[in-house]
Image (cartoon, rainbow, N blue to C red; front, side, top):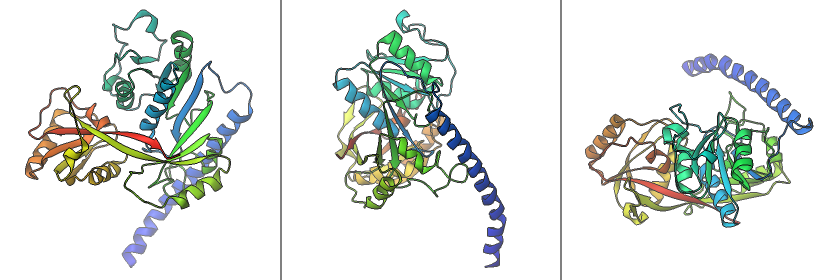
Length: 359
C-alpha cells in the first residue's frame, strides 16, 4: 500500500501540472473560436460547396473513409470534386512532378496528388499516405495537399473549376468557411478521460460540437451490437441541435500488391494470420480481422504513419514463419507505405473497407 501511495504522490504533481496546461490551452482555444465566430472577415469563403470531415480528439476516429464517402457522393451528383488535405505523414519534401500539365501548376505550398483523370503524380512519401490512398480510391476526384488549405481551395475553385470541396481533418481549421462540418466520434473511446490536451485527448471542449452540422459515431463493425444509446444521449445533450448518426465499417475485399488482384473476405475465415499496422487504432484493425474469422496469432504495432523499410517487413515475415501463419495482413493505408521491393514467404493482403451511415 505504501508503494502505491508513493507512486500516486509522485505522479500527482505531474497530473496537476498537465491539468493547468489543459486549462490554459482550453482558454486559448475558446478565445480563438470566439474570434472566428464574431469578428467579421476572419473566415474566408470560396465559390464552391465546402464540406469538412474532422474530429474533436487527437488520434484516429475514422475520418478517411468518410472523406472518401462524401467525395463519391458529390461525384454521383455530377459535381467536380476536390479533396484537400494537410498531408500528414509525408516523409520527403519535393518539387512538384515535372510531368504536371501547365493548367495544373499550383501556387507555392500547394501540391497536386491527382488530377481527377486517374493519374497520381506523387508518392505516399511525398503526399502522405491518406491523400495518396484517397487519390487511388477516388480517381475521379482532384486531390491536393497543403498546409494552407485556403490557398489550395482557391486554386481548386478558380483554376480547376471545382464545384465541391471535401476537407480532410479540418474541424479546427476555422479560417476557411464551410457549408457543412461533419465530426467523427470514436464509439470505443469518444473523449478519453474528458480533459483537453495535454492532460487528455480532446482538441476542443465538448461544447464545440455545437458548431457541427452532423456528428457521426464511428468504429462500429456490422456484427457488433454494442449499446451506443448512452454515447448518443451525451452527444445530443451536449449539442441538442446537431443530428447524431451511427456508422458501420464494412470490410469489402482483400487485395494484394499486384495491380488489380483481389480476393473475397472469406479467404481469411479460419486462417492463421500475422497482422501489422501503423495506424492510430491498431486494436480496431485486430478486431476487424477477428470478426472476419481470422485467427490473429501475432499483432505487430508500428507508430501511426510509420515509414516502413525492408527490414520491418522481413521481421514480420520471419514472425509469420515462426507462428506457422497462413498469411500476413495489413491495412490499406499501410500497404501504400510499404517499400517497392519487398517479398514475403507468406501471402500479403490488405483489407479494403467502406463506411455506411445507418440513417
